[in-house]
Image 1: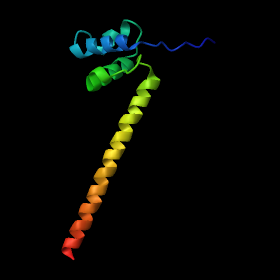
Image 2: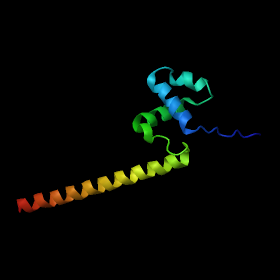
Image 3: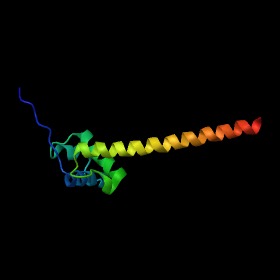
Image 4: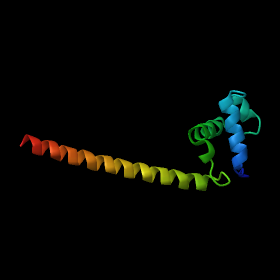
Length: 100
C-alpha cells in the first residue's frame, strides 16, 4: 500500500487562493476542483486570510509557524483574561467592603 504524501503550498499560493474565494470569483467547491485542494482547506485559508490579512501564513506558510503564531495569540488572550479576572476580584472585594 502506497501512502500519499501531503501536498504543501507556499504562502503566495494560499493568499491567492484565499483572495479568489473572498472576492467571490470562485466558490470554495470550484477552487477545490482545480489543484486538488480540499474544501475544508480552502475555507480555512480564506478564514485565516480574512482575519489576519498580511499576518496570515507567516514565514513560508508552513503549519509549524502558524501553530507558533496561534500559540502566541492564545498566550496573549490568557494574559488578558487573567488581568480581567484580577480586576473583577478587586472590584468584588471593593463592593463587599462598601456594604460592611
